[in-house]
Amino acid sequence: MKLKQNYYRCCGIFLCLTVLLFGCHRSNKLPMNYVEGIITLEGEPVSGASVRFTPKDSTIGIGAAGFTDSHGKYKLTSSIGDSEKGTLPGEYLVTVTKYEFIDLAKPKFDAGSQTESLTQESKNVLPEIYRFPKTTPITVTVIQGKNKIDLPLKKTANPK
Image 1 (cartoon, rainbow, N blue to C red):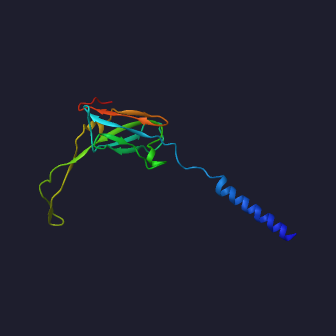
Image 2 (tube, rainbow, N blue to C red):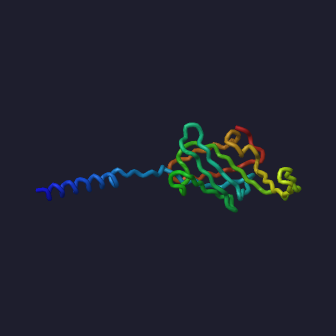
Image 3 (tube, one colour):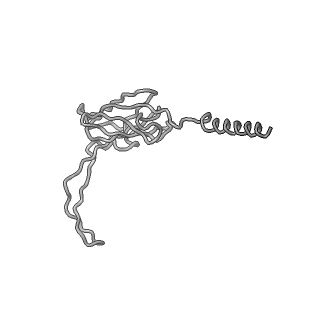
């Protein structure tokens, strides 16, 4: 009799553990959506640019970012969900920057360490209006599934 009770007890424990481990498992991946496109400035592809989608108003998430290749093509990735797929559906403010290094500046003297050093500065070569979410005129909507969102920039962009 004791053997039968132990058998049922072990089966019950095994069943509970199985349900806890496998039956209640939920995927922690969010429904990410693929986003790609081409960034141009006055019709010419912009290579080496950084693009950032910042959630607007009620859109949830942290946004996504990407870089353009030599043909101006970008693909968004995110640090949440399935990072290869892009971002969550919703409305986004889009910022675009491209930094280039300026030639070495004049040596700078640091009084604290009594040393001179050469510094290299960088400069955003795209219109400043596209640099910050508060100033960018670009708003896009990401829908469920695949999204192709081209971003044609202008040298003289109008504010929002």
